[in-house]
Image 1 (tube, each protein chain N blue to C red):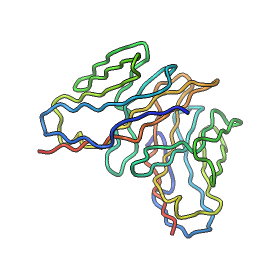
Image 2: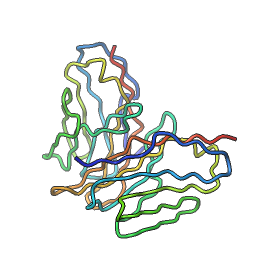
Image 3: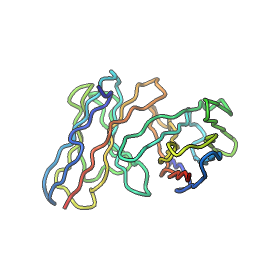
Length: 113
Length: 112
C-alpha cells in the first residue's frame, strides 16, 4: 500500500533553521501537504505543494519537492518556540477513482531557547 | 464557529459499551473522513465517505462503523468498545477538487 515516512523527532535551538524530511511512495500523488498539530489541538494545514512544482516559499516556510526521489522537505527559518509542535507530511493519493490523504507518523519538533 | 465540530471532545467509557462520536461540518464539502491518532503511529484512516451514499473502509475499519446522515454529518460508532480503541479521533472534510482537508479538534476517547 501507499506509505509516507518521516523521522519522529527533531530538536533545534531558537533562531536556527529546522528541516523536516519526508519520503512517500506513490509517484502519482497530486498534492503533498504539511500539517501542524499543536498540543491538544487538531491539525492545521501549513502549506502544500502541487506535484509539478519543485519549490514553494511562504514567509518562513520553504517546501522542497524532489519528485524523482519522492522526497519532500519543510524548512522553517528562524525557528521560534511557538513552532514546537508535531508536523505531519501527507500525500493526496489518487489511486483508483478518487483521492485520499495518507499521513506520515509525524515529526515532533522541539525548540529550545 | 468552527468549520468542523466534533462531539464529545472527551469521553471515558467502559469495555463492551456502544459509543457514537459525531461530526458536523459547515464547509459544504462532499468528502468526510474519520482518522484515529495514536502516539508514534500518526493518523490512520478508519472510514471515509465521498458523498451521502458512498461509504468506504479505510486502513483500520475493524471494530468501527459509520453513518453519513447528511452531507454535513458523519458519525463514527464503536459497537462494543475495547481498551485498544483508546485514542484521539479526528474527523475531517475536503472538497472534491480542493487541496485542503479541514480537521475537527478531536475527540479523546478512553476505554476502561
